[in-house]
Image 1 (cartoon, rainbow, N blue to C red):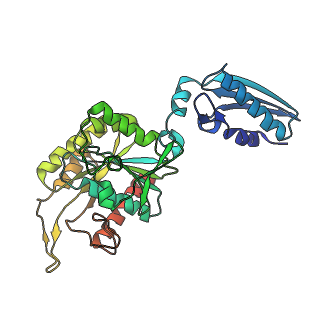
Image 2 (cartoon, one colour):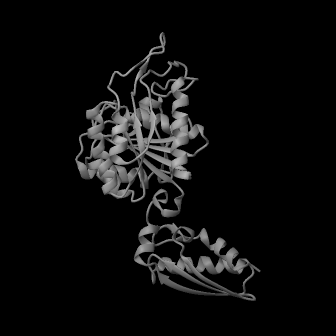
Image 3 (tube, rainbow, N blue to C red):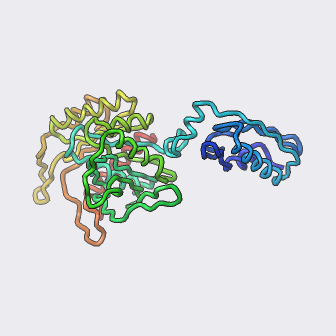
Length: 343
């Protein structure tokens, strides 16, 4: 005869037909009592007293009698509002998903935020982590091109399967427009697209889901902050004082919306001559440190200015790899991020 935990495991895979979520997802199996060949189960559903409930009731009785119980007693109750809200979230957004969200933000464009997003995602994957990347810069999508992705996502059942490259699962607005066409949308439509990226994409089990945010503090950034109550943020700046000053706004927005500033990344920190080895601070000096002090957060990396190696056979124009010195720089950044999050 089955134990209480075994009965719970057997029922966990059954679907609550009123909200299309498994009883395991909803924690809908509330009470199990076993006495010899009799089992009593209390089940919470999204909606009680429906025809769908009768269908599920028959499934439970058939399953448990098939496991050796002669008598099955069932009681039903409605999920409370909090449980129902949690149960109807996309799997990736539930508290028990095990996924850490990392938003990569900047105060202004042109600081290399997307380059940092792409290379950090690839470095985390190299470190053995299961990684996803959302190109949330709806107007200025660039991630597919940076990674050299030419194929489109496929649809399996009702879910979109993200494209995988260098061990990173990727979704982007760029997959859904033709011939690099401009996106001319207003705020509510952008929010709907972002919802689709969470609701309609089959992410599977991820350790980290990175979001390449658009620069500034506009609608998309606000939507992300409201959708993800638990999120860490990396703020990207250049050494220039003005870039750091503007980036502080993005950091302040993260703090006001109860997101944690994970750290600061100073991109294009300097240019190092291959001939002399001398460092030239072409965009100024000290911006990352000033931003770190302003936001009371660690300066996690100072990434130099330089071009990835060309690889015509395996095109990915913005990924540092093939033994490029910056590959090691991003590996160190990935380890610093992992240490900050996982301890």
